[in-house]
Length: 134
Image 1 (cartoon, helix red, strand yellow):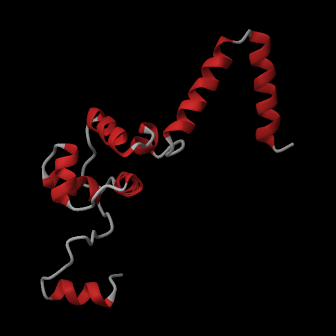
Image 2 (tube, one colour):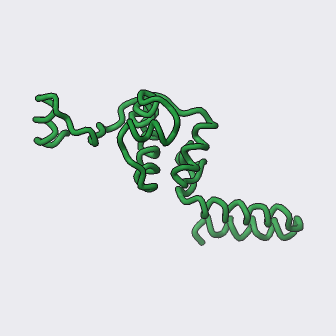
Image 3 (tube, helix red, strand yellow):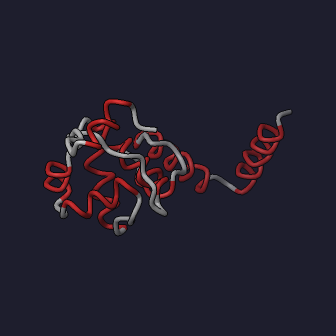
């Protein structure tokens, strides 16, 4: 629900430019992650500035912020890069928002992949025990 201040401003057509209504589109989960990435990066939040940062139109940024459409995969990579967040987190919500945590997990997975089969089985057994809560 809008606060009294925003309710009155909306009635009189003087809604503050920095106010962004909650996302309502079919991709609202992405919209929330996009907003979090922009905020975390300390980027400006106005459409005019975000469209320049990402090189797209104002309506496109509006649609991202409100969950009306998703960016292409290549634009998703640009957004992740410019906001310094993990691409997988931005695109799907899975994993850590932190780029370094993602890189660390990738490096560990590569090391496990190169290990002998006996070592991989041992690691799988350890993980099974840990996941079962024993």
